[in-house]
Image (cartoon, rainbow, N blue to C red; front, side, top):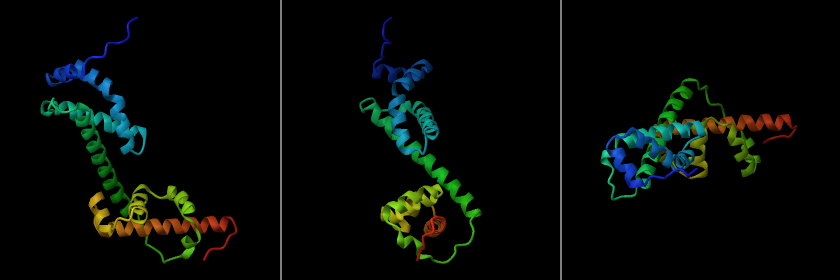
Length: 188
């Protein structure tokens, strides 16, 4: 048996520009691994990455007429995959924001339990936070962005960023208090 013949990239692109479904499939197969590697870096899990990659290929095929063959195809495809992943993440965060704010309870007073933990303890507890709270906590507390910058990145009001940060801290406090009570240690 002969190994499968790999079709030249320029021929794949030329045929895809002409609208050949067969060559679109071949291009998909040839660049799937590359696109998936990018999708996985920008997605929460493999299923999300697969959706991003599939959506990106659809966008690429629909925009193939705009592709400039003088430029590297991988760079063009990478841009489409990254933008598709970011668009999906924004959409997911927007949905999460709406659902979480609707179900949110009141914020309670300050507890000093978090002051008694080291950074590694706190990082291990972060896994307990909902995705939006974790994102805002990381952006504000770890990466040093202010609420206006976070609001711009996530397309939310700065006040929502503040609320989610407060809720994240409150949830961490409750977890810490529960942990310390379960292990007989005192806090604060």
